[in-house]
Length: 152
Image 1: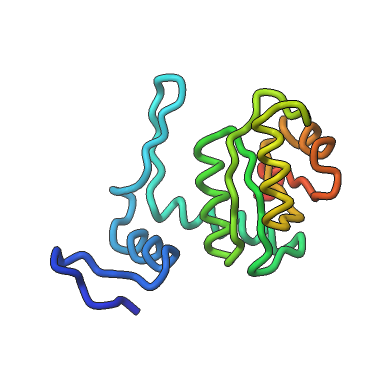
Image 2 (image 1 turned 90 degrees about the vertical axis):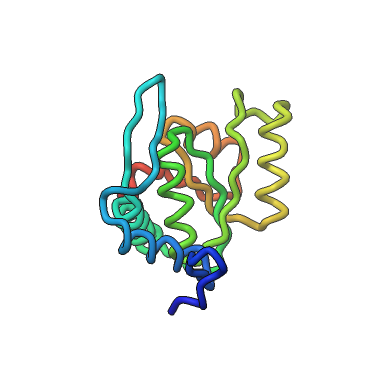
């Protein structure tokens, strides 16, 4: 259900997921996100984003993740990162994004921030790009590192 429109006629939504659902239904394939990588731009509609987020969320549920379980994100590809972020939102999984460290070793300051953030959040699960999975398993031995591309 939509909340009353604000002064600009834009409906307010109780949650971010409601806003995505509403926008996906209202805009079809015309509106969405443009990803720019290496000078090449690709478009993904909000409806497509929601569909892919739901598919990814189903993969997370098959692995046993349930609402309110925090998840850390370590994903290099922008499109996959946004899909994973939305999959977590759709599933009620609090997510945490920390920049991907150039070297996933304990002596790297960015990697140390990831370790601290995962510990503080109590995240047992990390969604990662395939190429980051092995170094993340070594860096975060108590976490279950899930290669995001294999969940689809």
